[in-house]
Image (cartoon, rainbow over all chains, first blue to last red; front, side):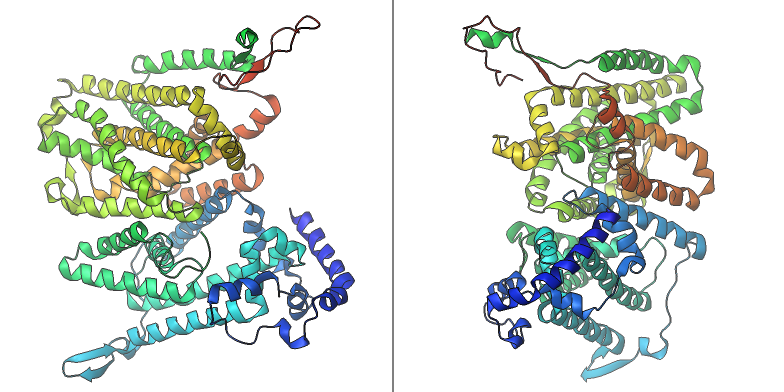
Length: 286
Length: 353
C-alpha cells in the first residue's frame, strides 16, 4: 500500500503540471473564483455540494502546502491507519480499538488506576453574578465559549479553505478525489491530526472539570458520538446543538434521580434516532 | 425439466471429511473430560466453550451479515439478568430459564434492531454500544436484583441444580458443552440452508447479492435476532456458573465484546473455523501472560493490530485461501451431469441450493 501511495502521489504531481493550464482555461474561471469568498448561506447544502468538486482545484492545495512530504510526519494515520483504509469498516475499527486498549493499559502502567484531577486554581470556583441568586460559573462559561470558538474555527476551515474542500471531497469520494490529484493519504493524516488536536483540547477541559482515570475514555466517546448523530452528520453547528441537548437531558435526568443522569442522555439519543434518524441538521448522508 | 435432477450441489471435500472426523473425536473426548481432568480444568474448559459460542455468534453477525456490533454485551447481560430475575422473582427452575432467556432476548432484539438498523457502518457499531449502555444503566435501576451493586444467586436455587457439588459442576460443564454444540449446530444448519447461501453472498459482495434478489435487510434482521437469542442463552449460563451478577460485569464491553472481537479477528472473520482457531490462540495467550496484568492487555492489543495489518483475514484465512481447507462441509460446488449425448439439449444448472 505504501508503495502504491507513493507512486500515486508522484503521479498526481506529474499530472498537475500537465493539465494545470488547460483545466483552468476550459472552465473559464476568473482567477478570484477558485476560492469561494462568500459564505454558503443560501441553500447551504447545494452550494456546498457544488463547491465540492466542480470548483475544486486540488492543485491549489498541493501548491499551498508546498513540497511537504508527509511520509515521516503524522505517523499514526500514515504509519498505521492508512493501511486499513478501504470499503471494509472492520480494519480501522479494530486497529483503533487495539490502540485504545494499548493506550489505556499503557497509562495504567505509567500512572496507576488512581483517579486524578487537573487543578486550575481559583478560576474553578469563580462566578459572575447575573441576577439575584443566579450565578454563572466562569469555568463552564469559558469552556462553552471555547467550544463555540473551536466549532466556528472548524466550520470556517471546512467550508472556506482549500484544506476543508479537500476534506469534504475525500469524504465524498476517495477515488474521484485521487483522480483530481488529491493526495488522499495525506488528507487522512491531516484530518486525524486535526481531530486529535481538538480532542486533546476537550480532554484538558474535562480533566479540569471532573475526575479522570485511564479507563474514563470510552464513556466520553459515547457522548461525542451521540452529539454527532443528534446534530446530523457533517454539520458542525448541529453537533454543538446535539451536545447541548445531551447535556441538558443529563442535567434534567440527574435532578430526577442521580441514577438517571446518563440514562436520560442515552434515552434522548434513542428517541431522536427513532423520530429523526438523520439527525436535526444533516449535511451529508450516513 | 428432467435434466435438472442430475445437477447436484456438493458440500463435502476431503478436508471437511477429515475435519468432521476430528471434530467428532474431539467432542467425545471433551464430553468425557470429567474422567481425565480436574476441577480447575473443567472450569477453564467451560469458559472456553462460552467464548467459542459468543465468538461464533459474533462471527455470524459481523463476518457474514456485515453487522459489526460492539454491543453484544447487551444480550449477554440481558440473558444473565433474565436468569436471575426469573429464578429469584418468578421461582422458575434455573435451568428452565436459559431457553426462556433466549426467547425473551429474541423478542427484545426486534425493536432494538428497528431502532439501530437506521445507522450504518461505524455509527451502527457505536449505536449498539449505546443500547448496551442503556441496558446496563437500566439494570442498575432494578433494586429487586441488587441495583448497581449486584446480587448473588440464593443458595437454595443453587442447590436445586443437583444435590452434590460434583454433580452440580458436571451439570454445568455438560450444559456449557451442550449449549456450545447446539449453537454451533444451529449456525451450521443456517449456513447450509438457502439463508446461508444468501448470507455467504452478502459476505462476499452485498450489492451483488442484492442485485441477485437477496433480501439483505430481512436476512440481517433474522441473523440479528437469532444471534441475540444465542448470546442471551450463553450469557445466562455464564452467570449461572459465576453465581453472582452486577451490571458492570454482566454488561462489560471488555469481557463480552472486545475479547470476542479479538478472538474472531485473530482466527479469521467470515469463516466458521475462525472463532475456533481464535479461541485457542486467545486462551493460550491468556494462560501464558495473564500474570503480567496490564501488560497482558497491552500485548493483546499489539497482537490484534499486527494481525489486522499483516493478515486481515486472520490466521485461518490464508489456510482456507491457499489450501482450500474447510472443517465442516459448507462449500457449495455444482456437480454437472455427465456430458449429454450429441444432439440432446444441454442441461441447465438449476437454482437449487
